[in-house]
Length: 366
Image (cartoon, rainbow, N blue to C red):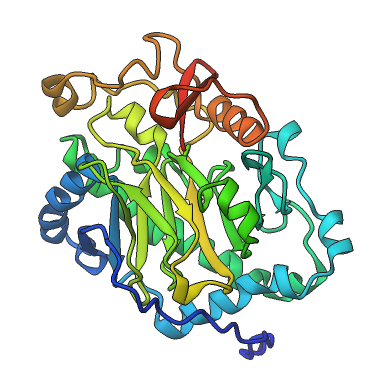
């Protein structure tokens, strides 16, 4: 019989919780264990619908991974940053601008943040087909665990949430699931991500913003909650508010493509990353993410014929997509990824910069 012993991984020590009183966003909590029954889905669907209509973010609990499994994933997530040499990282760096995909490393200083300051963010991205590309030596023994984690995320977190959101649009509950199939080769991906502290000069030039306000391009994003207080959302009241850490919880946010196909009924909420509060300065911020896409050939057009809700509410996309000129998921993904942090944007009023990519108006919030 094969060994049940897991490969050894050096434990990752997360930062302590912040000691400051921070302005936290009030987000809905979805108990995903209830989504296993029709009765539970009927109970959860209005909660998910209202959360994604207003704030575009929610928490998920009881998602199927124990605290010990979650800790193991953070231990693994630290490997590509602390146990791979800089020379080997360069070998596995992705050709992001040319390919429109993030697979492999995005090394530090690839993105321009503001006033000549480049980012201090490093991430490593993995396709659900973990053998699609080769990986650094230190990660290879861990690929079976990574693959199992990705599959769990897609089938046991993303799909139940898509069912709830389809119910909220009064569509058959598998409508959105059938547009984001795990068994079809696509471009969903896992990301291990690490933010490194910056010097005071760079903090001043960027007004303490580590990653500008933006909306995600994809369908749904899963963020494994971690203790460094740096993620903020732009709440409906116009305030930037922190997302509070929830032990062994998931932070879920809705991306552009669900806003597009719901005709603006669901909202891709603006979020950013800022310098942590003083009690957490000097710590790195390690993140574990899963970015779920729709199938490559899905047209990003409002599903008016399928959804009585969109018919009643009307399409409210604020001119972001011109009627009849919507891109496919594949086209929009490639263009957004290639352009991000690499192109000149049109400076706008109130710190909102814009650019048009694949016929879609994209906004960046300073």
